[in-house]
Length: 291
Ligand code: PAF
Image (tube, rainbow, N blue to C red):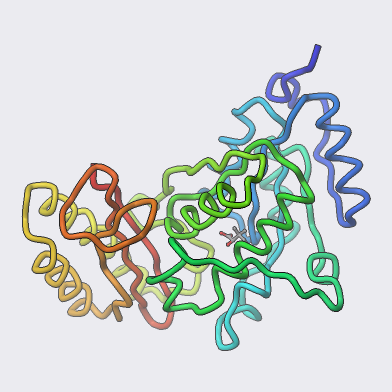
């Protein structure tokens, strides 16, 4: 009979794999004992949002595997790759305390072998919004996730809804490439004042940190007005205006069809209100459901 990992989390200690052979051996052994794997891909600098993903993975009953890899392919030339926060010791302690079974810490040479010539090309939900603001970003995200899925071979992988477009891109890729895993979206974890948790929040100065929760407030108020039947464009424009007046540089605030990210005019339960705005050079992403 196969064991449920959640029932046995006190028995094994967390394993750490730094090479592909070690990862494969650890995954094979966990799979043989417990029957399946639940996977949480991350770039480290873990916060409560990541903890919620790991908790959901552990709660599934399968051993949770978490990867930490700051993926150069998803950063543009003038983006923040070099200053992306890194805290391996802190992250390992967090994962151990969260009941993670195995941590995968690949290096760049393992993920991107010399001479590699293959990336994932995307259309559909990868177009517009972050796709326009960060050309090549989703190609990098999808490519690294496809590689991680191939290495870990999980039954389920967990992604935060905060990066709504990323979640839809990954779901579409998994469906289109017929990959044998389920993608599970987990609700955004917020600070008490509503700010969505993000590894980049630490770069906000005190004044911008105090202003930042307005992004979520404007999204919620605009969503309520849309659900009450208000016309979309004037409400969206009023939201953009309120954010600009508070000091945000608004990249977009849009009503979209949730899965396809296509802009729409009318609220519906599957619609999503999405926004990205910058404060002091820090890009803040957020979104809210419409139903
Ligand atoms: O959301 C993230 O942290 C990253 O985009 C991911 C999914 C780990 C891929 O590098």
